[in-house]
Image (cartoon, rainbow, N blue to C red; front, side, top):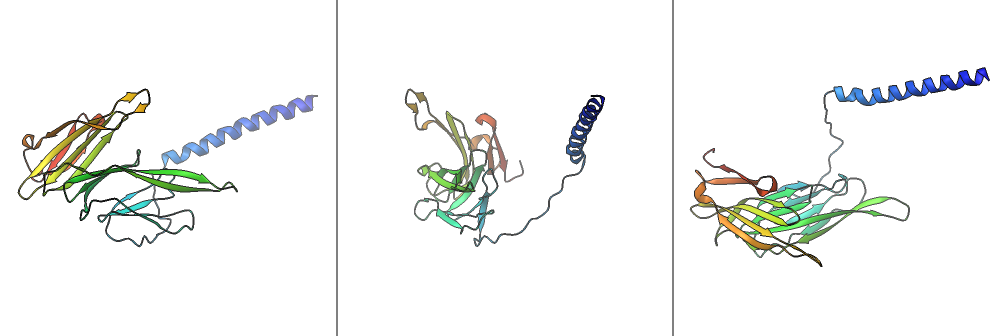
Length: 232
């Protein structure tokens, strides 16, 4: 009996030390400097890309060019490149872009003064053998006019919540630039939520001291940060 007690106590001590060394092994890397190394190159076959995005698993990134061509690349499998086209209005090209990765939301400013928003809907798909791949669906809202006729949107940013969407854009005209902010809201009803409807739109150009070239929408759309050509 004494031998069993001795062996049992020794096993408990060994287990405690094992837990201690495991925790120590997990903590030590925290005191080391961060490092990044390349794991390889993947030819995209797409030139002139203006945006790269990726899913939460970092397995199926996409590239976007100014003509509205999207290409999805499988980093963990052997699938061919999937190509999709953004439903741009005729003769329009993409002149600015904002990408909210946490929402997989794209906001595209166009050369005709319109803007376009859409979602990249990633989803895991499991095969019968238990293997997993990442698939994607795309949802696009209709293009809407925001800048004056003859202008192009050279800067755009967006904020989206369950009940509010705020779009801020810089419209570059022939002789001047405009900072335009559009606010849309939607309400819940017994059947779900309604679509976004225009709540307010303002041209804030008069409040700027220079020519606007970049805009960011602050948290909860309570503020804007604007960079002007003159350095302000």
